[in-house]
Amino acid sequence: MKNILSIFFLAVLLFIPLLAFGAESEETQVYHAPKTVEISGEFTDNPFNQIINGQKNTVKLTFDNKGESNYTIETVTGQLFNKDNPSEIYRNLTAYKYSVAAPSMDHVEVNYNFYAEFPPQELGLNIYVYFSDENAKKFRGVGYNDTVTVVDPEVSFFDLQLIFMYLILIGFFGGMGYLIFQSFFGGAKTKKGKKRIVKTEDNNSESDKFDESWLPEQHLKSQTTRSSARIRKKNEAKKE
Image 1 (cartoon, rainbow, N blue to C red):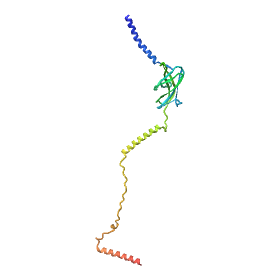
Image 2: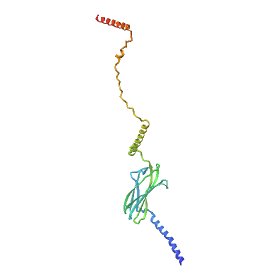
Image 3: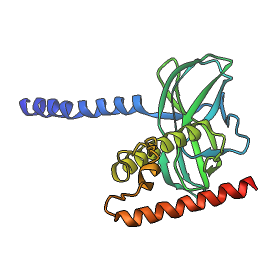
Image 4: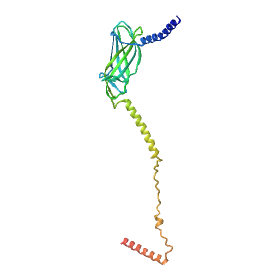
């Protein structure tokens, strides 16, 4: 009898974890969206379904609840994959929590934003909407499933951000160039002084004077007589 009781208790101990695991699996199980719920999505301000690299891409999701149950939108996430082979996932997009109520016979809209960096090409995009009912039963619906085109952003010469960046770079390199020029080629600038004009005195009278002290007296007398004779001839010519 004791052996039977021991085996019974042992079986109960082994069976309890299985019950807990089954209950946990049932709680975390996600079901497909009911037919009374319709979810659709479209890019905002983007009629060509383009994903622009490095910029925020927004998909507007519309949750249309046509049933009698009330739901709550909990999480939205997505995937980018090979459009020719959906099982080849390129990237799992960021999951965002919302906690948005979707009452019975009503529809709500939520925006899902994501970023991407891929070479220009065509990819498949899936966006999943996770929601739950009043009994905490979880569902998953597809909000977007289509081919998108990855493109690079257009470069505009009038982009204020680019202009501001160019001005910063020009100022930086200009300042560095000025410092290098001053370091290697700069120096004390020579000031141009005013030209000083030195006035020289007229020393012709002194220079014209001839020292005659060393000449003999006879030579001086003859020279004086010659000059006197010349003067007299000039005077007589004037009188005539």
